[in-house]
Structure formats: C-alpha cells, structure tokens
Image (cartoon, rainbow, N blue to C red; front, top):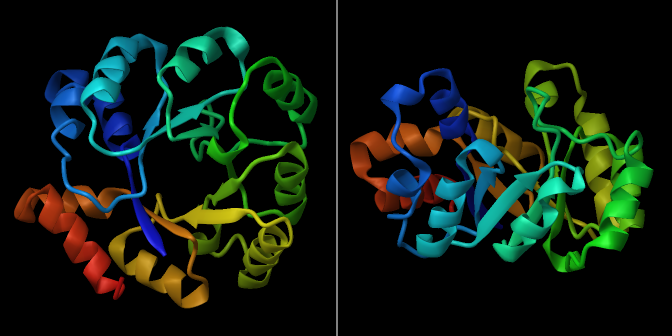
Length: 223
C-alpha cells in the first residue's frame, strides 16, 4: 500500500480566508522527501500561476483534480501531471458522476491525449460508477468515504464497489476526508492501493515537520 497527500483541505481553508494562508508553492514546494505517491491539488484557474510555479518546484508527483470542461485541458496537460483526477469541484465531496457525464468524458478523452495510466476519477463508492470508470479507460478510482464514515453507506456496499474495481483491474485510493482514527478504522475494512492522507498530515506537521509527520502517519499503519 502506498500513501499520498492531499492539498485539498488546505485549499479549502484558504478559500475561506485567503489573507491568512500562504500561496501553494510556499507551502508545498518544500516537500522534498521521498515516499508519497502524489500530492493532490485541485485545479483553480484563479490561482493558475501558483499551480504552474508549484509544478516547476514540486519534488513529488502532482495529481491535478480537474473537471470535464475542455477549456483548460491543454494548459493542464502541458503541466504533465502524474495523475489527472476527474472530480466535480462544485460539489462539497468533489465526487464525479460518470453516469451523468459519461458522454462528455468520452468526448473529452477522445479529443485530448490523456495517457490512460494517469487517469483517475473521484467517485462515490457505487458499483455502477466503478463499471463506468473501467469502461472509459480509467486506471484508478478514488472513493469518497464520508458516507461510509457517517453510516450512510454500508460496509457491504463499499466492499462491493471495491470488488467491482478489482474486476476491472482498477487501482483504488481513499482516505482524503478521514481523521487519523478514521483512517485506522477504514484500513480494518479494506486496504487500498493508495491511502490518501488529508488533515491528519497538517495536524501532525505543525508539531513534527512535514517529513516526520508523513513517516509517523505511515508508521502507524505499519507501512
């Protein structure tokens, strides 16, 4: 199991009070240690200069969360991200509905040369959504686990989505919205290919520094 980091919690906080938070490169370009599978950053045209600068100086693979609109695809692909994650950035959970936007995604992928190995999509853990991802050529599905953590999604439903991903040989990732105890609980249910770490990383980094925080969290899981 690999581990990845998500910048989305920081980006969310920054949008609420931008005057109190540093630009993305000032926070993340200094992550020079090895280990994380990627750093997830939500594409935002309003801070495109920051994302371009972050890409130049970032020592970790970059995962860009993007929508399905074609306006910025050439610019996004020019950044050569390690992953392009389709996400609905207008939704609080950023989950993408592949059933609703199936034709739009298919046309977009036909128009732009996105390597299949870099294609990831953020989904609710629904088998039908996973099947659509497999048929469209995605290599990885990232599940939102907020429903599972709140009890709105059953373990059986979640595991069915994971089994469907295995049938389509899709890699799985999840955990971005979980606290540290919740991450440990999730791993008792299922170990993903990539465990995505959100707020726990920032909490521990305040006390231990970024590299030690990452190693401490990974050490808790025996990985």
